[in-house]
Length: 246
Ligand code: NI
Image (cartoon, rainbow, N blue to C red):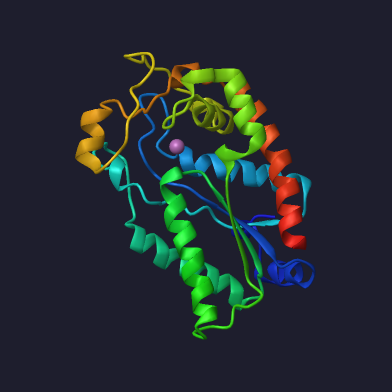
């Protein structure tokens, strides 16, 4: 069930037998010459919708803005500071907790969010520990779809060393599967993008002029995206079921 298309009485009924929710979280940032700017939000959202087809779970609206300051040298990127993202996440969690949600599962699509989400979890748990709020039965979980075991195996098999770490053929494939009418092609030069560490937005664009890091997303296909989708959905279904029972 999707929160956005549900009514409040439907949510009240849902809460009578489940206290769990999946919140897809991503980013709005450049993804190289052929990758959609929404890739990091589209991927976890697509998987979350797939999970909802095979298990009873509520899917929250996707948090589509993330910590992406390093991509701001490319037009179309919209970034939140880590402190802003923390504030947003804290309010989302408190809103859900107030209504009875106790197991909140963030399905993330953007590596740049990970540190901030984990810090936010500690901040929220600290509110309970220090007595600022009673959240003792709150369970928070962060999972990154691209880190799922089945996804890693399949990515390696499909793309090998061309996977890289940003604008990867795996994430581009999954977004192509979600939006087959929006598939784009581009010439990659060099074929395999350079690797390196990232700092601020100007440094990023200087080091990685077309936005990719270590990847060749020209290899992305709808078919590969479908395989990644199915593998990841199956794994997240099991993982989510275990989480809400815990
Ligand atoms: Ni990405």
